[in-house]
Image (cartoon, rainbow, N blue to C red; front, side):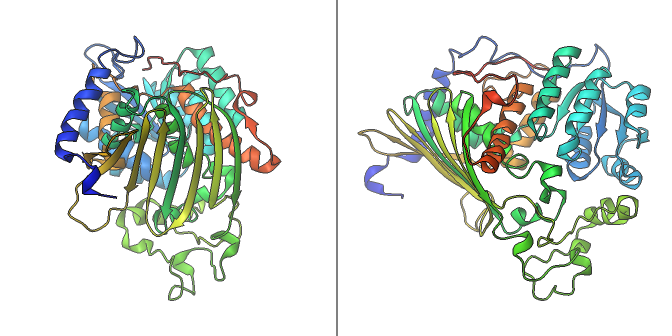
Length: 462
């Protein structure tokens, strides 16, 4: 790929493309694109935060990390989880002295938070988003916003009814590499986008982990079409700058679940550990032992479940054709048992092609950057190197949280995701599920009151 006869100086190109994209963005596509979007507490007071769902993501990214990073701007006033042991463990991990609850209504009524952070099981997000807004809080929710079209409509109706807002934390938008792709596309470097090829690979560590946990059940996660792929569909919606219109999909369970030749209830009790390449020794993870294993007695949840349990009912390979309102066609796939983690993406346009091959489980090498390749019609290929991010999810986590919690942070790349964004990302996966069930394409407009727009609508949130 690195043909020296048809490439320019990479260092020179990295410098010049930044200037090109920056110039293009001086004239924003929307007059609200660059407005401040941080959450603000009443003058002289800290933002009052309540958190429901004290599992791994809630206690780390949306607990300990934000308390450590923004102590001058926020305080936790309540933690809630249905597991009485885990909520107390979560309190210690986060490092807060706030009260803990197993009764959500009681927490909300007693603590009266400004903002509720929702990090529970996906299928329950809607309950806490809706009731949180009804009880006076703005919402920050982990993706996916929810798991089916009826729940999406209920959230949309509640937001309209209460006047509160919901922000969906699509941290993938914030990684420098993906933001650079957005810049190049907005600057017209390949002309008008006509089609996209997007293929995501989960490896035999991370990918398998979804089949150990509650995510393996479609009734809990909405399947990986929703839990995982909503991340990817949101990126597509953001990059393409249009709304998805229809989806046709295929999917199957070919590797995990019923396909295994050996199985057990969970890894700790398995008699086949010497044979199984998917054996996961949870006892080596101190945090998981304290957060999950010690608290199994309260709800029976096994964090180290067998990937070959016969109750697995989600797909482990998926493919979809997505048509956008502006005419862009997307070929998407997700594989959950790849030898490496990452993705390949290519945008075809009227003036060229933009592509990247990203390995998220980094290979052993001296490289400290991700690379984008720009092909312009009738010109030499050009390379852009984007240094690795310094926080989780490709450098996106810290940037996302800064934009949420610090005052006067602008949004020049339209990275803030509101309820409509969260809904559309889920609806692509929901439409894919429905398409597989019916064998027919599914129209996004038939699922909820959201009507796809040829050009995305932008709205300031929080």
